[in-house]
Image 1 (cartoon, rainbow, N blue to C red):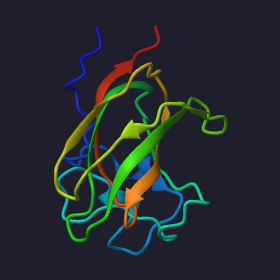
Image 2 (tube, rainbow, N blue to C red; image 1 turned 90 degrees about the horizontal axis):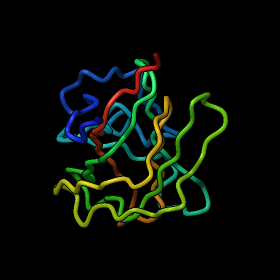
Image 3 (tube, rainbow, N blue to C red; image 1 turned 90 degrees about the vertical axis):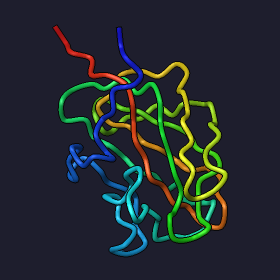
Image 4 (cartoon, one colour; image 1 turned 135 degrees about the horizontal axis):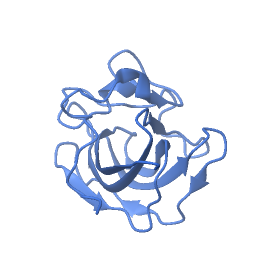
Length: 152
């Protein structure tokens, strides 16, 4: 059985930096590598407060398909920026993504950790967190919990 308390290793740094990308980032203080729970900075996109452009953080699971059960998230530790609503999108080939129709509730401030349980999650190699609503600007710090699905 898949445990929902196994972390992918964003907060402790064991998840590799090359597995974290984003559509854009604001500056060197807001790169995708800062999208890690409890860090001193956060990821923020270069295009601030524009709802017409889809921005996201993407994780690549090099160990194989990972089933994400829970997402822990924070906003910015420096500014009043955080994500209030988001969607999830997954892929196994990096080209064809399936976006979950459910819009999840995110943060209500920059520092509190909100744990979100994903319903109907599927194992994937590529996993996107897509902010859909936010306070002032997008800022994300994340940890993912779940398990690798080993192919026999």
